[in-house]
Length: 371
Figure 1 (cartoon, one colour):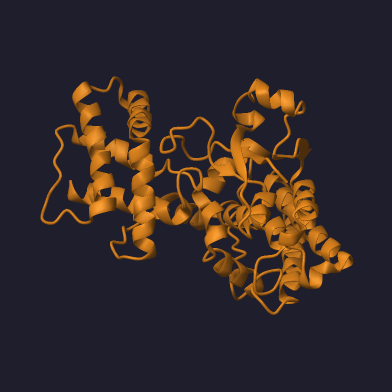
Figure 2 (figure 1 turned 180 degrees about the horizontal axis):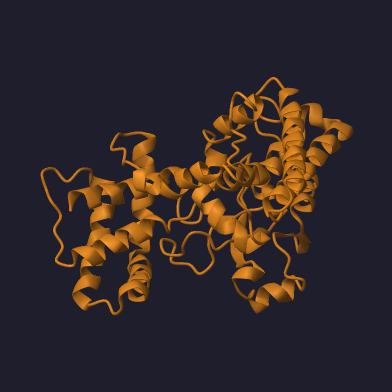
């Protein structure tokens, strides 16, 4: 039909600098991937969740309950991700993603029920307060049982996706939760569902989706997820043995190295450079606010040099290595603090793709190394 719009959740994740927007980390509903998987054109926007601020009046007039995500299709307003996905299936039958074995309604219902069970078991363990050892073990056991069920659903197909050799309706339903489950379980529970020895089908699914351009364009990294989840779902509790996973996720940005090769690496560098250049004033202002909280008033000279430092980062992303050059700043301490802070503020996919964020962080590390 004419005039389709999707409003996805705007999540406040690790930061708000690079996009220059007050609404962060756009997570389009699963239906958005379904709508776009075969070339469909969809317009949309980002709306605050309640935990991040008030929704605009125009949105509440359209959606009185304020629920997200929302689709308006030919004047009809629909909320709830699964309802949106089924609506898109009914309206755009020529681009249906329900096919193959999932044309069987019973098998589709079973697969979607396993997805709901996974979500419930994940949240129960993640948000369960530390207490009796038996309670922790029961929650873990229930979660592992549901992950095993997901393995079985995936393993029934010959291809890496739930639908076989290409993405299916069921992949779109599972993707948002599997991504969050993987990141949060590593960080708070020390368990990785991408372990190919324990969960080979799930590991293969992640490997395949992360190389798929559509999935990759809306994917988030682990750091974004673990920063965004607590404001949305409440406190998440760490289990004994999770320390290493926490350390790896928290320090990942500091270990990134920029890739100066061509091809996909170059595309990612240019994406990161464009995001930084387009939002340079917001990045500098965000860094300045941080410095003011940590060290008091920031001088005009330091502010100018911070701006220059981020222009240097953009230049490295576009032009490559600073051959034989050392970057010198009179306000070295302030510049270093600003670069390190903004390195941790990038959010995916709100600011840029995961691949581009790695190049952005790598470029910052490169400039820090040249100082």
